[in-house]
Length: 614
Image (cartoon, rainbow, N blue to C red; front, side, top):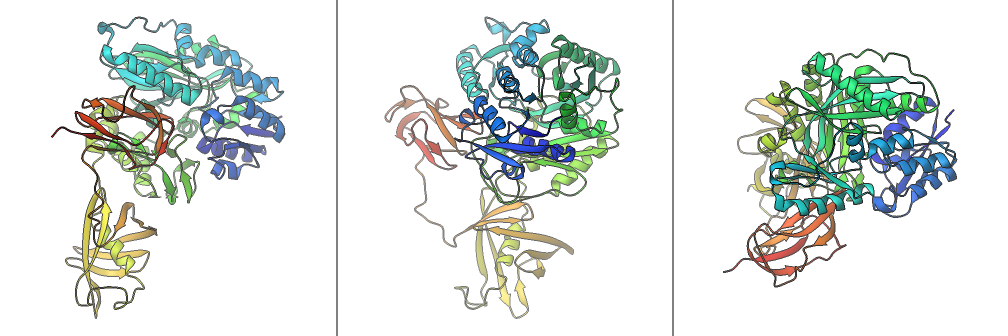
């Protein structure tokens, strides 16, 4: 019987596992890096153990430190969550050798399936050897891990070497394993997977299908169960292949077998020997707690011969701190407020006031809706996200709402190329044009009409804001009858709420201020000084950091005075376990290089300047 469980992970998944432990009466132990010392998972656990350092390589990927933490804290079991060491057979063995229960499959099953190359061999699929032009396009893929890290699509042979190098570096940083392989890249298809659960008594449950086709950078964004519109015969084939894969390695516990379905045929991708990020949609449809089942299986309990019946439809959306309109650039900063309406499930590793840092995945939360039908589930989730209060860095929330309401998705005609086709139409800024006025009116609350303003009371007052990358100027007046603004009747104003009569309709604007950062409903603004600084201008050709991160590489031979061609990679930034190229904006001369390898930079930091010829 398990009494104390250490979760060898962080953030949302650690918090989610701790909730199940609380329900089952199991004490919990968290591990945390220095960067995570105040993180939610470290705060909610019964016990927390520090892993010195900040990067994954120094902390969450150090199996020896994690096992020692479990022993020192008196844990009798370890759950790996997903990512990090969850598919590391050596770590599983170290846990077992320390006399602890391992909440996962046997190390031998992990070895057989955690490497995508060996898994394909087991299923009779060979990776590509020598790549020729006739093989293109191909996909370079990390053998270990998941989450889209260590993956590159190659469409030209001269891009292959750089793709291999970049994928190896990214995989080594994220998983501690730089092995990569090459396979044919299918341009379109649906990403469909089967959840399995197996016990130590020979029972294997195929727990339905999931569709995870909406992806960016090969990482899932929206997932649902069951996968819509699949013929019964194809579903049975997917079940059979998933059970075959599980039995082939004597699998135990929860796992996922992933496929790409194209032209009505399933193409095996991999088997993930762990819990998946999207497991809540399966839990909702089957009415079970997969983490609780994992723990019971680890304690030796037998599963019933048949799984519970499925009911309804569930959809999950991943909220990321990222900017989809600017190459999905990850964002950092303070999450001032996150509040989701009742009626949906929220799994998160953050609470109000927490900092979103540069070291880990930018996922803030998962929001899950369950309803009797797919259409109802989509509507419910889109409605909840649309009304979620989210104050802080830029997120993908608007993209999620638009995706859930897009006709191609609502009619289940999507595939993995969805965002390649539709991203521009899904990412236009949608600021509320009345948000600047509401912010200005809220700011006047409590001010003296005569003591706080330079202008005469009878003259219009002016305020400037930055909204969606553009400056907005608003004007209003103080009169004997109160505040007035052209074209809008002011119904009510105080520091937190402004009500405007717009064409006969009363609209409410909730205003929250965090320094110069202002949120009006869910529109973000920055208060600007009344008079712009004429000196705050950058030289033409300046390259700014699009995100916070670490400079991990500078192009070989690059120095001030070098001639560079437009599009040439100059620098590589690593942020939140992904690498991003900084390329020359034009052909010219590198006149400034402000950074070195290992240096951390903030968004907007000047990295380099490329001076175009006169």
